[in-house]
Length: 437
Image 1 (cartoon, rainbow, N blue to C red):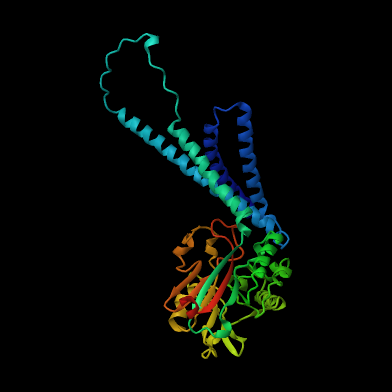
Image 2: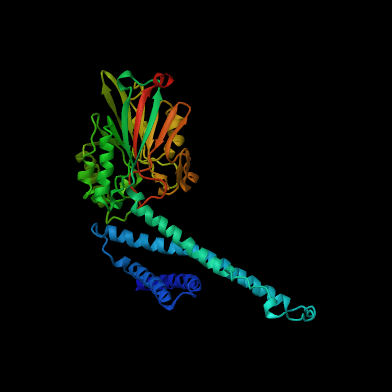
């Protein structure tokens, strides 16, 4: 019964928004032919009622893996549909406020005596009267049209972000010079993936295409910096065979992200949550990925080595968990001339790494997704996420330490990307003297 009452309340609010926006639709097309008006009005209300209807059945859709995509798209479409209408509401409200102001002014003016009417002017013959000026668009009509355009733009943009942006993978190449890089590792090419979020995917072919792009680069080693799933290990069922193909001569090394622990889902018991995490760890192993749990490994080549350190999630912003132990992972790496750190959350860099571990040369992170929304033109980049994270996409340097934040391979929440496209990173490490030449 509570679900029904909640739906009635929500539906009432949504219908009020729909009726308000419909006033703009009616005004814009009021001079159109009857058949045109019927078609436009019918389409408007059909989409509206269908949207409210599918939102109404959402709570009753099975929460199974098979229905995961359907449930997600129901919510995403509802959000897009009404988020766009709010832009129209803004313009219509401006027009209504202007009308209200004019009415108030007229009422106040009526309280004061009017000046006497001007004497009548003799009418000119019709042939001497000037041509009437063509009828222009009124302010109200302009605001109504602007409101509908304002609603259409975000709806079209978000739709394009799903259809095109979700899997428009981009390879981003970076070259970093390190003064202590051993000769045997000069020119090593590191592939980085992050934030796969397999539970959000809906296009296996496109995902396979992204993995093929990485493999075609033939990296020497691959790093994965967390968030393989959204919540549950079973989200990898349909994509295990695709990501198992990710291999490299020096290995694939991975860490956990905040979503991998299942903290954002209600489990029937603590034991079920624990089993889910153990299953996810086993998936890493079965794919041939070496999951680093607050530990390090040495990459060996021609008798020389560099250290790869990996920690569990450690976030300094918001309420993201601090499962990682840098002290534990770092232990035993003192003699490594170069140290590469895999840590999911970029806020870890300033909060702990740069303060206490100044010999960590490069930290590889992800987590932000660039908020899946923003602008990148040449060297200029902007996203709302930058107001929370100082480092949110690309390469950063402070003193002799580097941080690279991958924009993410997948997506979560909104199943697409606008402006900030999914990324495959290829980083080449060279000895510092190579760049001086």
